Each structure stands twice: as C-alpha cells, then as structure tokens.
Length: 258
Image 1 (cartoon, helix red, strand yellow):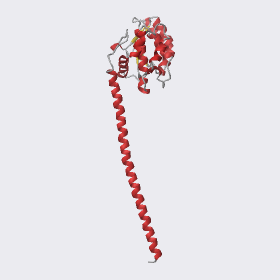
Image 2: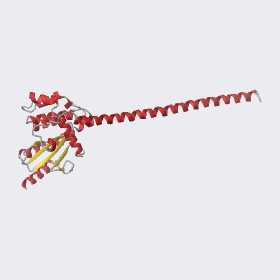
Image 3: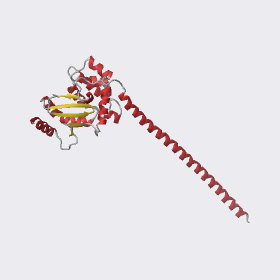
Image 4: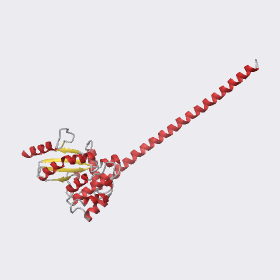
C-alpha cells in the first residue's frame, strides 16, 4: 500500500472519530434539554397549582373575614338587596352591579333617568345587589371598597345619590382608584350630608366588607353571566336586544294598570 493511500485512510478515520464525538456531544445536549424541559414543566405545573390554591384560599377567606354586617334597611334573602323606591310598587327591577364595571356605567347612563322617574312615581322598586367581579378579573379591591362605601351611604340614608356619584366618576377599568378610601370619601363630598365621621369610620373600617363578599357569592351561585345583570320581575331584560328605556317604561306602566 502506498504512503498516499495510508495517509488517506488515516485522515478518513480521524474525520469519522471527530464526527462520532460531535454526535455524542449533540446527544448529550439533547438529553439535557429533555430533562431540563421536564423540570420546567413540573415547576410550571406547581406554579399553576399554587395559583389555584391561593385563589381558593382567598375565596375561603372572604367568608371568614369577619361578621356579616348588612347595611341599614337591606332586604331580600340574607339581606343582600339595597332597595330604592316604595315597597308597594307593582314592578320590581333587580340590578347586579360592580362600581368598576364599564358596562354597568353604560347601563346607568342610558336607563337612570327612566328608573328615577318610575321609582319617584311609586311605580317601580329597584333592588341593588353589589358585585366585585372586576376585582377578581383585573385584580385590586376597588369593587369591594366602593361597594362597602355604598353600603355605608345606605346606613346614612344616602345610597341612591352616592350610587350615582360613584358611576358618574368611575375610573378606567384598569385603574383601581376606588381601592383608595380617601377617594371614596372625597366623592362623598358631592352628596349633601354624607361626609360625616360615622361615614368615614364605616368606609375606613370596611364595616360591610363581609356583606359585600356574601353578595358576590350569591351572584356566583345565581349563575349570572356578567354585570350588569338586570331582572324585571325575575326576567333578564339586559340580554334582550330589543330592550330600551322607553320599552322598560311601557312595561312598568302596563303592570301598574293591572
């Protein structure tokens, strides 16, 4: 065999050896990635389980946060409804609302004049149920704190006016301005006679927080799809695409004729 041929075979063997080493290194990296990926997946699953457990704990805490103190004059099952209007009214409107909810503000803007007109005339009774849906979806505590402040306003006999002020001054959904008690107290200054030491203490102490949590639990158990949920004598009229303030007024007037 010539020297040239021996040199060619030696070079081929060396190249093959180098290629085998590359393959071994590549296989080693692949196995490391598989193991590492499995570890990450396990950690990710643990994180998800932790979040679920944390959320479950929050739900439990809402029930055990303290005694449920209903606002003055609250009615209905478990005293979860704040009534506006005369009990003798022949028509009842049940409204589930969240003070951080933009759709709730839109409903209030469109329907408030008619609702006020009919309640003031003694033809309609409106029952308000307060919900903390946006707190759960976006984070924060503005829905709860605003609902507590509204319940404090109910104690002072000023719920309707303060309810309207909260919606008129609603912050952007992503902002949690109503988590600040000083903001809620500042807005109380827009309602004559509401900003008192008793109201401030009620707001700052979160007197009705557990009642608000119980109201939200009732909303969840009711199987409602979102806020606002508006029931006219038990029928969900907010889902009726043909509903208008004028149509609601006609429905109430028809009932009052009977």
